[in-house]
Image 1: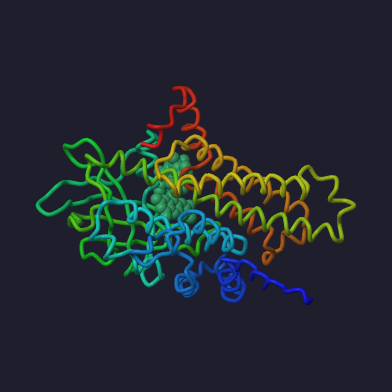
Image 2: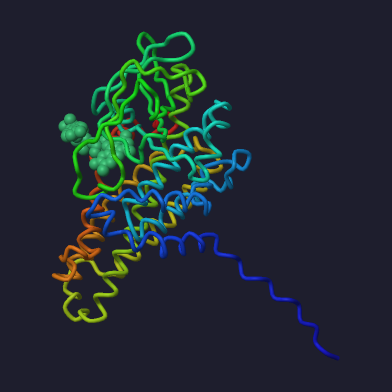
Length: 384
Ligand SMILES: Cc1cc2nc3c(=O)[nH]c(=O)nc-3n(C[C@H](O)[C@H](O)[C@H](O)COP(=O)(O)OP(=O)(O)OC[C@H]3O[C@@H](n4cnc5c(N)ncnc54)[C@H](O)[C@@H]3O)c2cc1C
């Protein structure tokens, strides 16, 4: 009797294989120009969108794949392994899509989401000032006034990335005479709105980070994601996932640093062994951070307002600290070779500081964690 062999199930397809391939072919050769010549990787971003890299942030009904933060962070991690600047742009693009997706504004969803999902439309997020002001770190830089059919906005946001003449971004600001904030989609092409070049940065200078000048800028109802009465609940929905998603930048960068340490150990293990942080230490911290990130991402994909705010803040803080530690260790392992202008080791160190200073920065996270812990860490109201 001949044995009947059951057909072997096909190996599960790697959902990020195409992204990884695109990064290797189209992003890796550009990294030095992005870093040293402030080149904005627009062609790569458009290609990444066409390959489905932003689709996790958008529901299938609006042209996405609905795989949520788990997918978004996975893509960001792959990109940030090669270039943190571009990893941050992936965060900007997917964050703005997620803000719109989590709003109740169907007109805005129809108008923007299908094009954001494919990278046909590029966008950013101008919520640093909103978050810092609502956490009592600085004053609001924008003010809105309610008028017939929408709002009129005035003020300046100094730094918003992934912008350009045809791009969009989301911001949130107080409304005169009302309690709460208005969350709005801004079209950079609006006639009463201006993008202005700002200072140059030591890293992430290829992120098209521009100042946004509002002068009686009219935002119609169709672009309002939340009015003041609904803004606390809306911020509570978008904020934990927006902060957690930044872990994609940290995981990718730390992975690349561990790889550099391993490479250096092929020839210099006998002396690298005397350094404080070893590749095993960085890799085990990375594995723990990765597990925690994807577990929290799954929880927030199931319920964006899940009671995990304190866990997200602590993980994000640890992610920034690990990025600095890993980049420092990678440079010490690589030595003078890592100090060369074309070496990724010195670039990674400059990039790592961005993870620690972009909102919510290390000091902001520590302030919020202390506040929540002092009041008994009741996370239900924490993100508002
Ligand atoms: C490369 C880069 C990209 C960024 N992209 C975005 C983005 O996409 N969206 C977003 O909302 N925020 C963005 N930011 C802002 C960022 O998230 C932080 O809010 C910002 O770095 C300030 O945080 P901080 O904790 O240093 O602030 P603080 O320590 O509280 O203060 C920072 C100091 O910088 C000063 N400052 C503000 N603007 C300028 C300026 N134009 N020139 C000089 N000094 C200034 C402030 O007055 C203050 O004294 C970006 C910042 C950088 C460096």
